Image: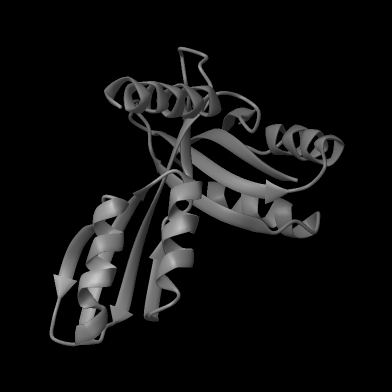
Length: 181
C-alpha cells in the first residue's frame, strides 16, 4: 500500500540526505518527494509517498524520529487532506490533433504554457487522480517530456474527506440536472 508521510524538519544541511539514507538502508524506495519551506523560517516540510504495510511504515516513522533535526512525522494516508501535484507535459503535436489536445486541456483546466508549430506544453495542477487521468488521455499523442513535482498535502481542518466532497458534488450536479429536465 502507498503511504503519504508529512515530515517537519529543521532546515539544516544534510537532513534530506540522512532521510534518504535511512530509506535506502531499510530497502525502501521513495515514490515521490516534495520539499519546501513552511510558514516558519528555518523549518521545512517534506511530503513523501512510500510503499509498505502499516507495521513497516510505523517502524519507519520511529526510525525517522531518531534522526537529528526531525521535528514531527505524520502518516496522513488515511486523514482527510488537500493533495496537489503539478505536471508539465510536452507533446509533439500534429495539426490534426491540436484541437483535440486543447479540448482535453480545457476539460482538465490545464494551462498552455508554451506553444510552437510542432509542440505544445501543458501545465496541469490537481490531485494525483487528475494528474494520472490527464497523463493517460494524452499518452495517445506523442508525449516527448514529462516533469512532475510529486504530491504535496495538508490535513483538512474541516475533517471532511475529499471522497465525501466529490460524492456531494456529483450528487448535487445530478440533482440539478434532473431538476432542470
